[in-house]
Amino acid sequence: MAGRAPLRAAAAGIIIAILAVLVLAADQFAKHLALTDLAYEQPVHVIGNFLTFYLTKNSGAAFSLGAGVTWIFTIALSIVAVIIVWLAVTRVRSRAWAIILGLLLGGVLGNLADRLFREPGFAVGHVVDFIFTPWMMPAIYNVADMFITTMMVCVALLVLLGVRLDGSRERRRGAVASDASAPSGEQPDSSRHEG
Image 1 (cartoon, rainbow, N blue to C red):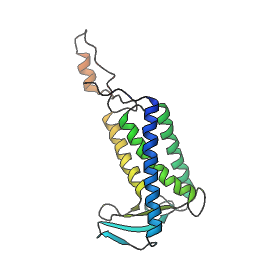
Image 2 (cartoon, rainbow, N blue to C red):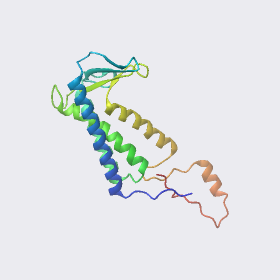
Image 3 (tube, rainbow, N blue to C red):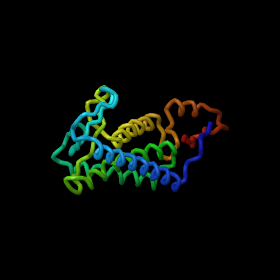
Image 4 (tube, one colour):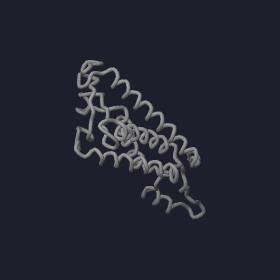
């Protein structure tokens, strides 16, 4: 059964751009509210210990790792953003990949904006974190982090399922063996596209 036709380059780019802008806007708005309404490093129990707001600024990565080399995270985020944009322009024709990469790009840009424009200065800014869910993980995070983490899981799933950037699926060995035993007049469909 054939899936939907692949996206045109412009359509994939538009999907990625719109989702990235929406996630970036949501992240920066949430951080603005946190900075405006929360006292620094004072817990606010929203739902008991299930959800706590705890405003902090992180110069490092997760769990404050690499706090002394903030500029490295700025470069890493910039590289990831450039790779996603390059893929959007040159390779992505799958709806699933376009959606996932758009949401991932928005998360990356959310934290990159902090690195570039927040104190203490350009390219060494501290990321605003304020969401704490101790039952799930001991880290304090933000909206951008949520999109980065969940979309990386989705990227892994698409890779494991064999969905290529153009929407086609990798052929498995079992499928190749069964195709080889098909009658000579029948040609297997190797150009199947998935969302």
